[in-house]
Image (cartoon, rainbow over all chains, first blue to last red; front, side, top):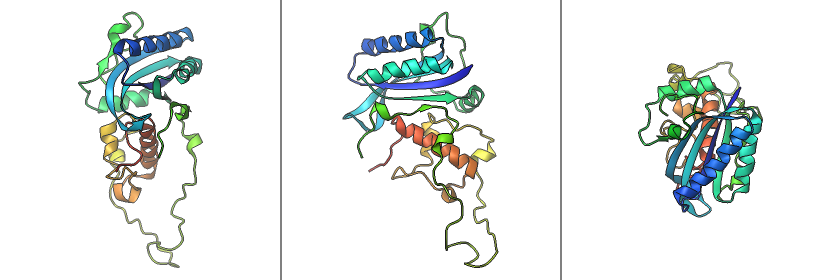
Length: 129
Length: 111
């Protein structure tokens, strides 16, 4: 099974429930297409390195997905359609390399792993990112 | 210049094949160590590659702290001869930095 990372950035002016709603839509899409969310993290509002559509901050969300590319494609399709998402990036990753890189780095305290949101589905509680 | 809209973010295999560009090696005319016509091959940079030293295989674009050490003031990527990185890791580093830039974790240019 291939693994992918998907990061999307929402407009910072949205209320958290709204971002949540968008997230759920994407997550549902991923599952529908046979993908599994191994990790879902809300990085929250972060300062952007440059202005995007006049915004200086953005609400980041990170997913680690296992599945076929169709799952990611579908999520990306929906992301493109949503004007409230400023930027996104999807990358195919090698799980081994990724976990190796992550374990080498000291875990960050300010990341909020959303494992609690997927009681049944969350397969791996892979070491703090 | 203008910020990138979400339409332009990349999606696809990270194998790196599509990133091929005209990166030439040391084939530049003039300025070669050892003079113009000599056969001498001087490896000036004896500095080590931090990544080789730690046996790192993958450079994560999300690791801003790590990456920041390779983009000084103006936000440009440090050349190998300054950072001492080996060619393989320089390529991985470049890829990571460029990705980080795409999602605004790193700047393209800094004023």
